[in-house]
Length: 360
Image (cartoon, rainbow, N blue to C red; front, side):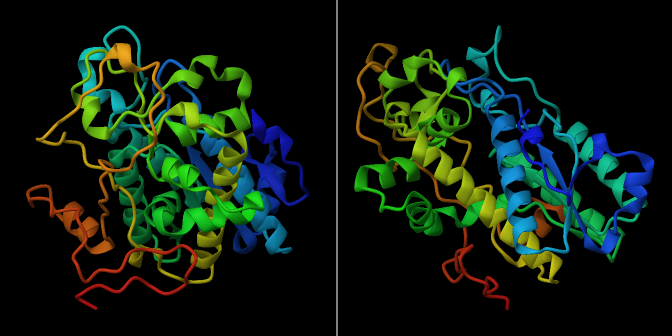
């Protein structure tokens, strides 16, 4: 895997260390990064391991940024957990009876991550950051639950999952950040395609063309835009949703991946400096139920037509820290609405201000 490509005297892989090497790490100057992946169907044009390649890329890039910006810091990389929870298959289980994602229940994932993290805490590490890429709402919620519960159990522990906060702020901040990395502005079609990317669509196809182009099936070049609402109604839905994969661009895919990495690393550094990241809004942001008024549905025969990217039916929903705590406080308590109140400001990863709510 790509983890072998990063070599640095202050970069350590847990599975490569001896007992002597593990004991020697300064617990006050070592950050533990813990990638949590997913084996999920990504249509007929991308591999099931797309999220695993992505989270490894994000974690390694974040590690490089942290090492470059703090010359006293050490990074300890945990082995990737390749299985997650809440695959997109669950929205159309009728189509994935013979092939599809391989995943864990939320309870199993929570137990695995909690057990592994607990060992690192037992060994005296104070800065622990599980990192995810898979956008399944339940995976994001499970990882936040783990971090919250472990911070409560161990008062000196700094543990957050940064990707959920990055995804929540992406719609405001991603375009200018990616333009900086590209060295040019995004054109209107590129910007719309990025905002309309949901699952195995323009962005993830672009990302895989940048990371592992040999694993991308050339059929992506003819795949059109599919709206979120159409996922539920299309006979033979092909396993992707959002802006057409045909709009993919490997340069943009690499730039977005680097943007996410730097945003995650910056949040990790802020948390290590004492900031409570739980005051930021975080993903999940996509609803699971279809729209009631489904119009203009596409059929299997239409997939060769590459339509213009669209963001009309992409939901915009966030879970605030307060509502996440309410949701997890009691099994009997009914979950609150995920939509932000009108008075709640949206998260911005380019700003350091905390998110203010009506209760503040």
